[in-house]
Image (cartoon, rainbow, N blue to C red):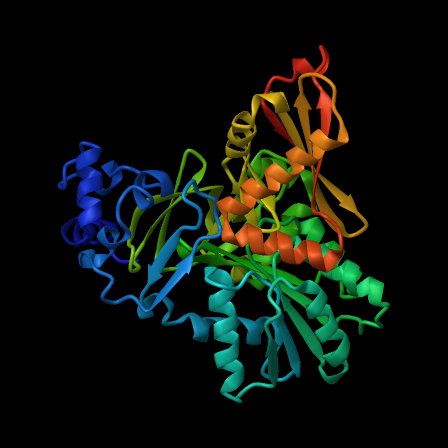
Length: 454
């Protein structure tokens, strides 16, 4: 983007909420960019009326209001967008799908399996696909079952023989549910015909390779599962390319390289950055400056990540010359949420808030202050097992009270969670959040934290 100093100066002059924000932090309007305080959802986006955070303190240019997928104490968070925020989205989306999946030459069924309603990702992508399909220029057909995955699989079963390939637009964790439903139907899915452009959450390179094998692609095929990075707050920040995926596979194959670059045995997501966003890495977290109807100046996303530079990679890794040549000069790596959160099918569940909910239950429910959450895989379905420790004996009635209160709380915190849980549970035919009680004993009482995610 243009000079961040010039941009931040315009924001100070034209965005009333930002001037108030600086004053509240005791920062002069003449402060250099590097001295400007970090914005967060809590200290900025939720602190001031949304109109005051827009250019010139007005929604005059707003063409769309959508909601954030995250949780907040006030429920859904709504954000306005202006036409220029999405001006190149259609063109960019069509270009990427043409490059990655050949939608200009292959008869393609696109099944959009995301939360719809006002959620930005769902409404934006499905609207874009419908406009592209309605132009009649490309051999694509779109359907929008949303999170009714059972209906999505019914549509696929009825129509897939009419198409060369199917793109399932969804969350990574929904792929297991879709696979389980396809298996139940005993469909003869053509080898190499299903792809999963995904949004909303981190996935490992092992996961991508497993899906390639599951749907009978070459294990090294880059776009069987493919993603970008952004949010309702920030818009598009980056996207995987063939080169960044090949780089990730190259690093993933060598434990020594992973340790050298990232200090862990995990390979984060690697993405080419959006030139319209200025990205900083502060204390290991991704900080974004970006022009939009609600302009952001040093906005802390809460996501953990960093930047890799092509010149440094050339020195540290023995990369094939062709791969090195194709890489962008700067690559963003993303590990996922830096905050203590559970990712439920693309939606963040804040464990501290859940703990506060449990602490607020009636005293007769005897919550001890401790609970654990564990992800479990049952077949191809991911379940979330809560174990809540209580003082005194447990019984089925108390367990049911806890389970019901947890689901009621989570539904009340996010319309997106409510839609996801109802639709996904109905589609797969079982609860995706399980809960059991254990009596607090001397042994369990040695747990050091109120909650454990493992």
